[in-house]
Amino acid sequence: MRRYSGRDFSDEDMQLIAELITSNPKFHRAQLSRQVCERLDWRRPDGRLREMSCRVAMLRMQADGLIVLPASKLRQPRQPATPRPTPATDPGAPVACAVHELGPLKLQMVVGGSPASQLWNEYVARYHYLGYKPMSGSQIRYSVFAGEQLVALISFGASAWKLADRERFIGWDAQQRQRNLQLVVNNARFLILPWIRCKGLASKILGMAARQLPIHWRERYGYEPVLLETFVESPRHQGTCYKAANWIRVGRTTGRGKLSTSHQPTLPAKDIWLYPLRRDFAEVLKR
Figure (cartoon, one colour):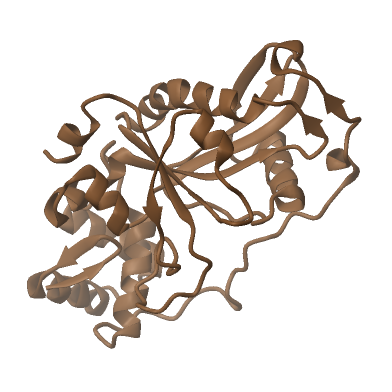
């Protein structure tokens, strides 16, 4: 049994994949990933095929010498585009006030490929210390407005495969984690625009997101997450806004990265913060 992209592949599964490649020499990699997902019934909770996870899995299988994929149709590897700064994201006039003095706050979901999406990417690339990185899989991004003024940006996506301190906090075993990991959602980016200085704004946005995200996630993907996670790089940040929003610090990462399969640290260690979206979150995750 071998494990790739969060799924165990038996010898029979590996043979099926190899036979699909051999019997369909004209298939490109995307076609193969769809066929593999359909034959193995590898789907998301909303029923859609896990095509991107499958493509990543097959690339790792090839790297391990288990299969030989058809040559990529791309002449050069596709590099994620880093948005270039434009006047649209130049710093605005400084705002310094109490939260209640701002206009009414609202979280506006960002639709991929829209002008709002391009603007969201550009702001994060320009002002977030981690920069912009495209997210794959299930995700939701929000632009946060106070009245008509953009004040913040926040995103949620796939959770980490393994986190020892998170697993201890939940109390689930490996099989339960594999079944229910999609019910944990990661707060990947959170940016208050640098010229917005309003004490308590960040924790208020986190509270609003925790209330609205399950509803929007169900509308988009057909199920509700029960736990949020995020990582705070200390001593750069102390996680003050997460603490104020009642998130729980449960430990630290090992520095190996969210999707790493290596045992060596390659990133700064970060504090792990969790936020249960319902009281019985642990019971649900351990089913």
